[in-house]
Each structure stands twice: as structure tokens, then as C-alpha cells.
Length: 290
Image (tube, rainbow, N blue to C red; front, side, top):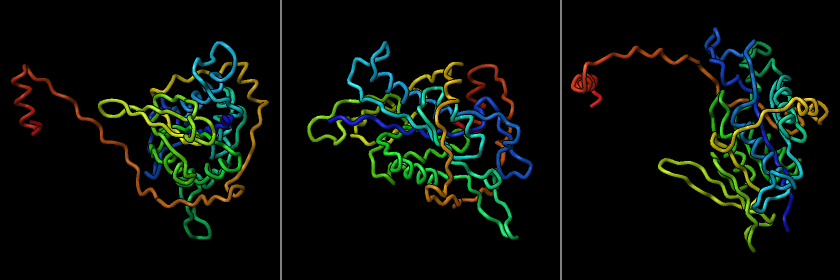
């Protein structure tokens, strides 16, 4: 018997991709004060994929000609300061049904503070902390499909999805460029569906297949996210946004790593011109490139 999909889409508030990051004065982090933030682009892809799955399973012009599971609920989740509600409202305007904001005190989310004369670790979550939080949410909210960006563009860790699958003991597929659901054959899966995921690799593509429940991380070629329309933005204000804390889920937010120093990459040197091919080859030899 087929089980409806209950999807979890984690989203992160990051510095807008069009903004050039600047290192702060103490060289300990990227400057975030008075800097435009937006929804992590890879998470937009995940959200769009979840919405398209729902559209493909319901009657209408966007219904897929292929068998598609019924999507009963799309839940967006973000962990961070109060302004994370902005990206959650965007997620709901795009099509998420409801959202959970795990609020983290901004006073402890941007570095190390002194408490009682001693330094204390910030509560800005590392990938393992995020994975533990998501595992708690998956169990509490009875999710059977998690789709998230392969990485966030601020730390580029590319670890959370893999860690989450390990904590849950679920199948996983990373860097998805295509996601297709197929009806499970006898003995293939308890929830009635198999997930076939294609990703690009060096020299070609790789396709994996796994039963639900499953964790999938998304890559840039998966789809083109939609823009939230004004009517949907207004409707999103009425959708449920639940406030939680790390303590509600019993997750320890202490960091295991400490950033020692952040530096901007060195400026690129100007190029040089050569008269002909022989001159180029000679110059490359001088540089030891050939």
C-alpha cells in the first residue's frame, strides 16, 4: 500500500548570492551586519522540487503522466536568529504548507563570547548539530522524505544531508539533478515507492535507486525555482509558523570547531600578452607550466 509523502525541506538564511562577502575587522568571520540576506539558492531548488512533486500528484495541467506519490504535507524548517522568519515566509509563499523556526539567540550566533570571564562556544550550529536537529524533527513530525540543498553558500560544508541519513539509517542520494518516483515492486519497500535519483559525475551521470524513507540533496541542474507571487506572499502570512528552541528538541548547540582566522583570497595578478604561439610556449616553459 502506498504511503503519502510527508516532506521536510530545511532552509537556511544566508548572505545574498549577489553580494560580495567581506571579512570583518577582527578577521574571525564574514561581516553580516547590514548585509542583505536571502534564501540559500540550493534550498530553493529543494523547495521547488517538493512543490513539483505535489503538483505532479494532483489533478490539473501539471499532473505527471508517470505514477507519483500523493504529497500530504510540505514542512519548511530553519534554525537561526529571528530574521530567519523572512526566509520561512518566502518558503511558504513558494508553496510550503507550514514552517518551524528553531530560534537561536543572536547574541551567541556569531562567534565566541565571554561568560563569567571565560570564553563560551557560540550556538551557531555546525553540520552535525543541524543533522541531529533535523533527525529529531523527522521523528517528531513523522517525515518520510527529506530534501535539502547539497550545501549552503556561506560555509560550503556539504555534510548535513549525509550526516542526517546516517543518523536516521535511511538511504541517501546526493547532488540530485533529477528525481523520479516509481511504484515499488513486491519486496522492494514498505511504503510503496522507490526513488530514482540521477546526478552528474565526472564524465557522465550516475543513477541510484532506493526505497522510502530517504534523504536527497539537490544540485543546481535539478530545476529552476519559481518566484513567489504577490497573492501567495499574502497567503503565506496566514500559514502556521511555529517557534521552537534547541532545548525543545534536546539538541546541544555547542560547537566542536573554532575558526582561527578568516582571510580574503589574494588579489589576482594582471595577465600578460605574447606576440604568437611560440612566445606563449616559451612563456609557459619559463613558468614551469610545461
